[in-house]
Image 1 (cartoon, one colour):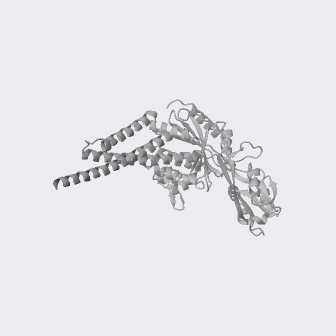
Image 2: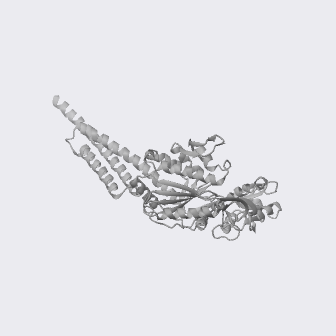
Image 3: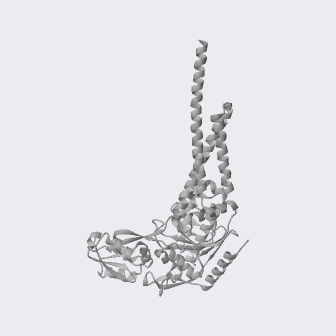
Length: 489
């Protein structure tokens, strides 16, 4: 009887031991799988130096072999040892899972920034509200007006012809086209959605007098015009365009923020040069009437970049398009920003006071857009925008905010588009992590005087512009040159 009981107990122990061994094997397989995913993502992310990557690799392999031997192979391992190895395996697996999650999130974010090589334009077909046309099909064989200065004119016409068979009339300026619909020379007009902001700016009643009966999108390739350098060793210039688009970041729209970031990785210094949105400049590749710099964005970011290059006689290496409204979500992700206001004003729920104060995203956006409270108008708005950007750069580059890494990326998703490549961004991030130094940021602004002039985009209608001040342009050129040539602090 005793022998049968002992045999039964041994059998139960063997069965229990076999179940535990299976559990241990599954646990080790999961640990190996998650460690492999983490290593693959770290390698793809390219943030670690070679020796750092191999250190992480050997550590994970060592822990895997140790746990595997103690849990599965060694029959002499004590119960306490096995418990420690199980806990260690769970910790490594959990850490690898979290590391993989953050790495993949970063990879996806950077790829979304760098993967777009096209721009989109949204067009509206508008008719008179008191007219007879209510649907796009009613415009068959009717005359529709187009602006001939549109660089994507043929593409726009062909896209609309896929919907309705119409007759076309071209006009050299928007004013002539708008007059044509009032004079019944055309049944409808096709207008870039961004031009509606131009017309509001020109204080016309066109938007109130007309209605949209159809909307379509035109997608065009964005030429790669970047002039690459080794951004971890050589100074470079990044043109930052703050788009006022309410849609996708790829949509062309007015460039309300125009900032050059002159970055010198040798000195860890950055120069921000703000250019007023109303600066009266010659759009690149055009002749005759000049235009506001903000209008250049409607023709694509390369038009804005090349126009700024012409203005300052410099070479811009890269571009970055920022959805300024959505970017300010990042402000909340870092618990707001501190700014120093030199005057007081109130807009909605935001009471901006003179002096140092803490702003959330709503009030940071108000602060970045305000110009009517300042005697210098748009010039002061550019300074406010620089303050917001500087505060964000300083906070995000602070190692203390690494714990909010995931939250910051989520807030910034869909807000950026850049001509920097994936490898360039990850290499620069690796360089920053290796150095762990704060950047010294200096800000300057171009200046000018207010004027009323016709513009390339709006034709003969007079709009407020800012005539450039040659002295501030020369000062900016000299500052940019000094940052580009500096070799040490």
